[in-house]
Each structure stands twice: as C-alpha cells, then as structure tokens.
Length: 406
Ligand code: SF4
Image (cartoon, rainbow, N blue to C red; front, side, top):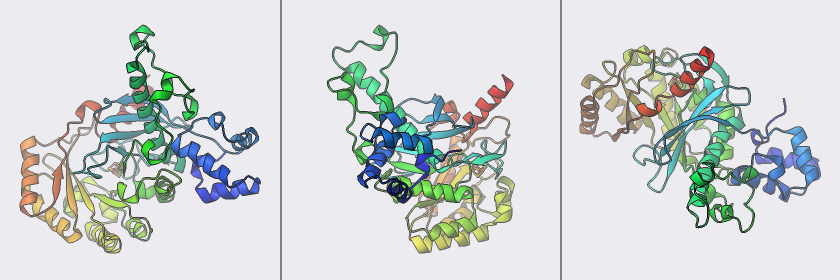
C-alpha cells in the first residue's frame, strides 16, 4: 500500500523533495494544491512539472472521500456519509456555528469529524459503538473530512452562483444538471461563468470550516498519534490554517491520554463526554468509567486545566429517567466548579434498537435552570435533529444494515 500524500507533514515532504533534487518552492506549490485548492487529481497541479507529478503518483496516493449520502440543507445542519478507500463508512456533520456551544461569534461553520470506523468503547446510548470497532482512521482520512465538506459546499455555492448569472440557462433548461467543479480545484477557464463564481485561491478566505470538533464516530484519544498529526497539519499556516483554539477534542474519559494531551504545545480545547456526574450513573452508561472512574478522570482534567489554563467543556446528554433528575444537578455543578468548566446539555437523540428516550422539553429546561441557579455556565442544545438521524453513527448504522440486508 502506498502512503497518502496528506499523511505527510511539511518536513516529511521537504525531505522527500530534497532527495529528489526539487527546489524548495515546489513544496509550497504542492501544499497549496492540497490544502488551499483541495485538489483531487495529480493532473490538476498544473504548475508542478509533469515528471514531478508522475513521481508523486508512483509513490503516493491522493485519496478523497466518496459521498454516499447527505442529509440536511445548506442553511441547516448537514450530515455527510462518506465511503473510505476500503469501503468503510464514516460520518461528518456540518453545523451552522453556534458560539454558545463552540467557536466564536465570527465563525460560520463548525464541522464535527470522526476518528475511527466504529468504536470500541461501547457507551450504552451510542449508535457508533453498536457494531464494535473496525479500525482507526489514517491521518489523511481525518483531514479529508474537512477538505471534502469544503469541496461540497464550494460546488453547491458555485452551482447557485452560475445558475443565477445572467445568460446562464436555469437547471431545468439543461436537464437539471449542475455545472461541475473545475477538475481538482483548478481555476476555471478565463471568461467562463465559472470563473466569476470561483473564490480566489487564498488560504484562510477559502476555508468554509472555521471550527472543528472531534466528536464524531470513535474515541479520538484512542487514535492519538494519527489524530494529533492530522490536527497539527490542520492548524499549520501551510496546511489548514485553523487555529488550535478553534479545534475541540472530545473524549469519553481516557485519563492517561488527557495527561499526554496536556504536554502538547498546541492549545486545543478539551471536552469531556461526561453524561453522568456520579460513578453510579456513569458506570451504567459508559464502560470506560470502570477503567477510569470519575476521581481519576477529574484529576487528569485538573492537570490539563492547570497546564493549559483553558476552560474545559463537560458534555452531558440528557437521557430520560437515567441522568435527568434534579438530584444530578448538585454533583454535576460540583464537578463543573472544580474544573472551571462549562456544561453543554444535549437532549438525547433516539437510536434505533436502543431503549433510551429523550426527556421532555420541560425537563431539559428545568435541568438547565437548576444548573444556572448554581452559577454554572451552561447551554442547552435546542435544535431538533431527529429528522437527519442526528445521533452520532446512526446514519452509518442504518446504511450498513440496509446494504447488508440487500
Ligand atoms: S459515545 Fe463516543 S466513545 Fe462512546 S461509544 Fe460512542 S463514539 Fe465511542
């Protein structure tokens, strides 16, 4: 198996190009094609000599993700189901940015990405772990989720801009087809309607995704090395150019890896999928708590908080009759105060075959009010997601089962 070019960082590409006697500026040209123009084809890299493109093609793959299915519309939450090179399926979710949850007021889009195919951690409420863990994602598979979503959004915007341009036939006049993206992100031909609709190939302005949350399928810190390499490329000015403070890593509670993350120089945000404020509740929902009980998890979070000086987020899925009673408010508020953490309350999204239920709106609002009364900074996710199989891993699970049935 050839390595993928996006699994290499800048230093690794530089040393390969030096061994091939390529001038240093070729590295910057290649990186521009990969992370600014989001190229999907070696042939599109028109300012690289043909011989260099051939050498790259012989020694590396240039993987992309195949879109199997998309749910949601351009101005709401959109869920993407991707097929990887080996046929495995993963999900990414593009969310209109919500500064109360993640990011800042100036952000437009947050992307939630996956790090594994399936999950070994078996949280009882979660669709992602229902059929076990299959494998870790490679570096390029983690990065490609951002690039592939951005290609999709750019294409959709181009299609709208071209359709609205004067003199361009409407979709129904051309058999309903939308204009294709120029191959591999190549600039559109001069004078064509596509040229007017093409954004300039500059670094940050070309990013659709402002914020990344690593909270999709899989336990991110169980794929630590690939995740950190991908996030460093995503953060680098020569790569994705997304600030570390706009990248949130969420974990179900792998205490040793949280301590390791505290030693990384980059200031990633940390979120804990807590879902229970006592060992009794967490043990019922999350097997990981038996290995790393709350005392150990909280101690690791305190280390992270002390070293990084960053506010931690506690994610708390409200599940009817399990963790939504007011007697859970005090222990949760106690943990939040101890960790200087804010709390994100997320009403449960139903998963087929699982017995858990979403609490009523009144119960969720009451839980939020009780937390706020304890002077805890808390938010309640109010958008409805049931119509797009909002539970993490649900769309993949349904598709895999449908394919197996067929
Ligand atoms: S909640 Fe996260 S850690 Fe738990 S099973 Fe689902 S994907 Fe894995």
